[in-house]
Image 1 (spheres, chains in turn brown, orange):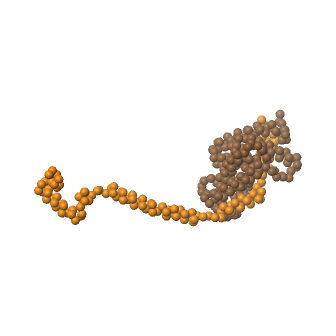
Image 2 (cartoon, rainbow over the protein chains, first blue to last red):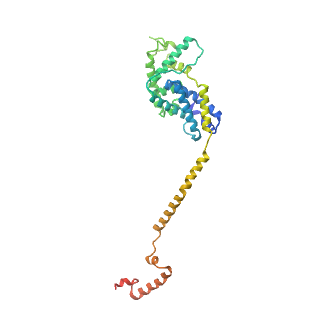
Image 3 (tube, one colour):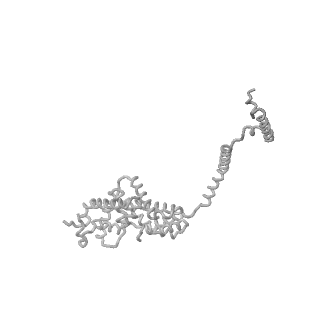
Length: 192
Length: 125
């Protein structure tokens, strides 16, 4: 489901319904936001179990905010992404520089060889993402994997749109440099 | 560097990272049903108690305790203001009973007429 973070005026209404105990509204907001939070956190942390914890914690904080939510400020989805980003930052700072575990990959029903190749590319990308500076990683994930707009990313990262563009561009340059040495192994033919 | 161009010859401007991003989007982790259920259950747990009346009541209870002190402070302020701003009474009027004021005024009038002073101490006896 596409999520336009800033064009969801009903999010605040849904949150108000959650505060009144409306479970349907809670389920709708969960389906709208939580899958994206999970993907974002998994790519930030490189660990699915931790990403699930972050997702649940971020959503819990959103529910706690629900009774006192002030309409007219940030959208709930933007706010909760910011919370998730901060939780990821906290965990990354606490963590020793170790593992690059890729999230579990679902079976897409293609040939075994294609699946393996694509899985290898995903793992290479996940590993390369972990090597990026944290802010660049956030910007690249939100822009190119979650497909958010630059203004939305700027609101989440609390920076200007120009800063987002700069972070994304630098992140992509660094990613390309990191992945360049692996392209033969990942099934890309050299064009020289 | 245009690595990956041979894979997509029809798009020479193709982003070299696009294939990686596409692959990552295709293999993104999904929110499983247990986690979804936990998140929704959290919402139910948060929404249940809403102690607004109790909070209001406790605020007024605090105000009730403070009220005598505030009232005392207000009265003291008013009294101080009254003492400071009101013109002090003449010494005579403050020292003598009210029923003596008028007779003393007559005496003053007589002494001024007879000796030119309203205060006998000014004669320096």
